[in-house]
Length: 448
Figure 1 (cartoon, one colour):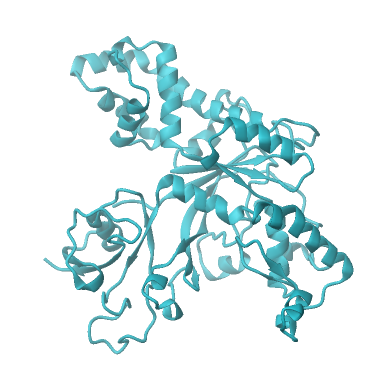
Figure 2 (cartoon, one colour):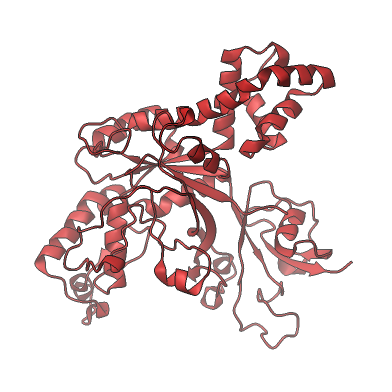
């Protein structure tokens, strides 16, 4: 059965990586849940009795994650309810849907802080790297302010582009070291059993979550014209580098963009890294806005470039100011500064876009399994629910290239599948590949 996608958050200590646990979710759900996963500075203001309206910049002390933590984050997608004009009845079992924008649960892995030399045992060493291998994609949170050095200690003028290079180097050296230890016996067995390069490499790299497709894609990216048994160390090193690129697609979350020194560091990183891997973000701004919104001081939707105060809404013609609370002059000035330095300049705080970019790199496709293909609800044909009940209760995320049969296994487990219906009640082949707007609304019929 296909497992759920897992996205790992990595970065040096004090980079702004660690996330805030949502205490209300913890009380209502035995799983650990990060509903506010974007709070990358782990600022649990409520638990420390900090009122952002009184002091929006007073945040708890920094800390370093010691053990990996699995959690549930929420990915924003376009829901199928908008496509069929039933957004007013969309009631997800998990997450939420507002005006056709759906928040879908996705599993996250927050791993312990990494330091240079981890592959040699420094810091938490191989424990960090071993935790990392379970992730399908990585979000590398980079402190572009230059105010923390390679080990996460406070400084000024540090070059954060070095963090990107050495973190990548640590992962490559870890895999290369493990591979070279066994290369002699691996080569002898490869010759003895007359295996293909894909078969031999998969046998050694499967522990890092590889599949034969991953190995084949790696080999295709660096065409090798010589047999595996003749490869030298530089060739194997190039192979490992290509494998890391293929196996661990990585988003670079350039955090703390509101710092005065961030611009020059962002420019340097942008010249050296692929544009589609970069997302600019200010996690602390998101913390600030979400807390103010929660306490009724502002109107703010995550991922937006707008934040409205009571005065703004009154000016727009709402005499009640949307029911928002009054702000003092100091807090109004802080909001104006945040608008100018972050929202208007960059278009958002960027934190919602970080997870969306990771999903894009993985090619994740949302699929909506329903029971009644005509009403899009959970009730069967002729049920009391009819066409007025809640719709699109469930949504699962699958990787690009997933077939209808594989989605069925993910949804139904080992239950026998009789047939599958798509929109309009049309039968759908189990071999069809799902995609956004294509075989993504499905009704699975159990039976033989």
